[in-house]
Image (cartoon, rainbow, N blue to C red):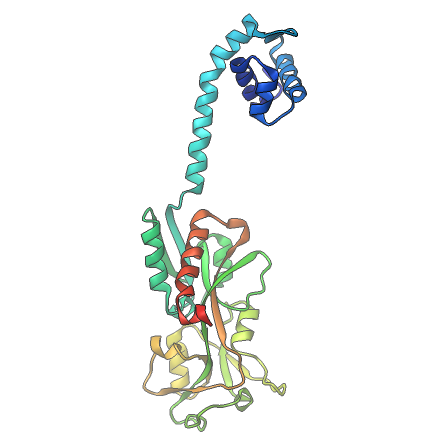
Length: 305
């Protein structure tokens, strides 16, 4: 048994058995003739005998070399085919791409078009949109492999995560009960919510939650938090006057309630969502979906801003 199977040596042997010329073999391999000679000596040491007779005028196979070529050439070519097929399979955009969303809001207004564009380009790959919900850390769902990509709020301070195309960028509003004293205003400052009860989702990463619903006002006054377990839970609590909910305007498109109104927050920056994935888990279908998303967004108002 050989101590090692070096396929570079086998390739050099087979090429030299074709060319019977060290310089031409070295040129095909992109090596020096001295390196080819070294590889051949190594292979001969493993075989236990000379494979070529070499002189200043000619190179020819020995009987042992002829036997080795006849026995190894076919399995070597078959192995090359297997490796080529493996490379093709590894680079193919196929299977099922699982994308997690904690709500429809995180996917932005163009997710349907992005999925359609991706599937038109890659019909062998299905897309499954998975509602992570409010009860589970969607960052942990990503790490556990339950989803391969996430549509999530930014900022996301996770060094192992790649942040891809931005999916949405929206101005901030606060949801209030219709009878709330602030409900009739054209806009409010975040300071106006001091001492109010606001939303908290304990399963969300703290950096994401604190950016979306700041825990203190600009003057440093603390807002009380109450855990929300779903969008419906949030809307009911707001309608009953138990809390207010800083969010984005499109929240009311997906989750309306007759007892709830929205008022713009003039001093909070816009909130963005984006596609993210584990950097170490990058796959062809992830790259392909990110490209589809970027191409779709490029032709929207968001892409032109």
